[in-house]
Image (cartoon, rainbow, N blue to C red):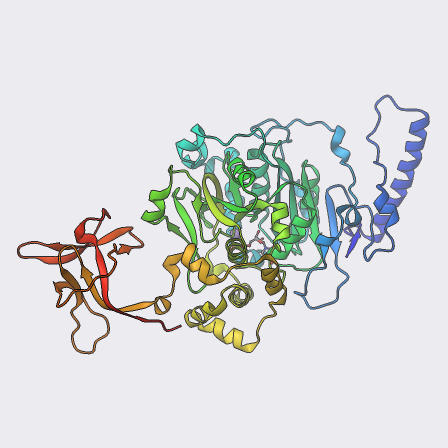
Length: 588
Ligand code: UDP
Ligand code: MN
């Protein structure tokens, strides 16, 4: 891994820069002899590590402040493993050049405080960048035109009347969030890692500025931008210049396409905050979004937490607040969905804004303790491009001793792309990632996945992925099986065909009637009715609870009517049942 000076300057410009540098040194020496009335900011001393390091497999050089080009020496295939960055000491890898802006005027007012008002780069700077590739943007699916037209100069919605919405004036949080704010005296600090590949300029910048505008400076250690080999011209020079004017924002550029999870890992390896927040680069943070995440992680370092994600329409950029009590789930195609919290879980909450146990976190924004993330194997380094990294992280967390939550008092808007907007290559990568996840984490339940996704089955037949690293990790961390996840975290997903089956008589012990199956001929399935029982045995009685509604099966016998109902569980005689003549059919 090399760290080199950025090469955006041609050879002539480089010579000119060198000459300027020499001239600068001479002036500095003269300046030391005869200090001018207003001293210029000085270049910082070179850190020791930078001088000692030529024997290493990377070279150190000075980059512009805040920005580094990270060059891989590897010639392997495009998605080969990332060099072990995590094992390198920070000071061996990067040379931090102290900000030359330290002494500059800081005039930005506004909510966040401490930041200068950022203008869009001048037309002249834009002109240096090659023509924008509109076709590529369309393929990305984001309506850049809507984003640009509506808010040509505004990088925050507050300044863009066209995009204002009630959600932004009052915030979309439940009023209880304001009444019970998390204590802010001892919160950990956060590094927000934003990786991007050819993201639209305005959505990328709005993400950065909404973080700067909403995250209290005391808790925001830094924003780490990771350019995952973008091709769009504006994301090169214009972005470098824009970022150079922001404090606390680093920009890393990879010379290889890493894909979202490895680009996030690259940013994480250089983050210094206590907590990592991974965020997509088309988000808008609501006031107060960060503190609940930090407070919850401070309470238990093995929690992986996400805000509620509000919906930003990809065409109109309209902002739609989501419901408070939702959880993230997966289906048997390993796709992610939001679903309203089931009644049973809702009743267990102490308040409408209590943290919500969630089988899966969404992909857009997720936070966790930095050391917890690194010590539990980060992301699977062989996941390609994008898709599935949220599922991998969630399963690993649940199965290897942590927990996953959505926090209703934290809200971030996420621009959901139209499914059709994903390119063929992205869809293939997502499918490939799902196969990896199934082979790594699902155990024998991967067969259920393959039954629901024939295209994944054929992909897996074409070649099994190499999951050695993850399997070793599972052994090292002592992770549980997917059966445990299904039984304890998301029972609703338990495949019907693998649930233990009972055959026998279901006896209502209070009323002496039996739930019977009115089967006609050999047709599968039957209507369940209440009928007299022929004999009785002594077994344990119990209630039969319908998982989704949390209600109990009750036998109701009136003059002209006998039937089965689902009613609130209260343990009365008509809700007590036992299985008679049980035989278990387990097809595992
Ligand atoms: N991304 C990246 N490299 C890639 C693909 C995606 O850095 O090869 C970034 C992308 O710019 C975004 C994040 O990863 O910030 C997640 O991707 P995306 O939002 O497209 O996923 P989605 O939300 O559609 O699942
Ligand atoms: Mn996204």
